[in-house]
Length: 119
Image (cartoon, rainbow, N blue to C red; front, top):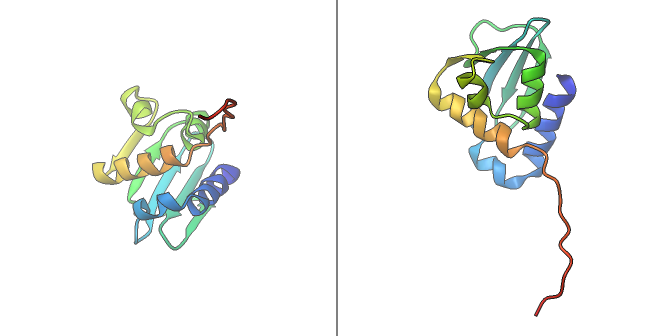
């Protein structure tokens, strides 16, 4: 999970078009799986993560390590996993949508090279 959060941090700060949708005040998200619990906090100024819990996260996600991995890599959408009941999420729907947008826009994109002639 540590590498996944680091990738999201890198993507958010490298992709300047994501800056406007990052929250001004930290958004804290608790990822609670069978094996471990991680706290992830993101804002325009910084991103932090650590193993462990916090008392009052803005969003609390319960699921498996595998599904969290897929969501953090952008291979699966958060709200799709919620609809399938692979993830339970507690917190404001508006914050859920904001987190979904950030994670989806941070997904790795394959670069395609188009060969051809112009004109």
